[in-house]
Length: 85
Length: 160
Image (cartoon, rainbow over all chains, first blue to last red; front, side, top):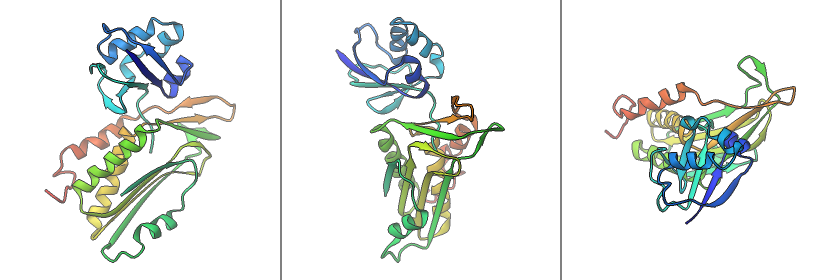
């Protein structure tokens, strides 16, 4: 099932893309697993997700933990801790 | 209740006037304005760029505002956050809370800032005089500031 994946701030810079739509295999069940799967796509991804533990995740524009299931999500975003205000 | 994400500057006085026009039920208005500092960690910066997640940002700000309105008796509230390229001294964020009495307005304004700092998907990048850019790191003190609101009585929840 195609999923829209978005990257922000330094995750975006390292991946070199703002967004992309990918066919994520069903075996990839959580956001954490998706980061590992993405890391295998190339060195730019591996570098972006090298510190996966600090990267935050949003599923369909809602904050979730990295261990959350991504089943049914149409839009998944990866970004550093927020620094607004 | 209103939230706005915009590249343009805001005028604090004009925003207050618009929020309170024709209202006689408001006894207290609190505003917070955040602005760009000209230095970061002792080093000068020449500009700051604010990135955000369109769609999610507005949603998070609306949720934070709803939460404040559920906790305190507010007559009106407003959050304005700027995005894009900013210079030292520029406005970044405006929070306005209006209530019948000052306690609710003070507490709600602080709550809104603490919450939006840790939840709203904005990211700051600072540019140095040599042209290099650095993403601002999230601060542990911002998470600590949020923690106090998890205990409503200590946080001054006037509805409880």
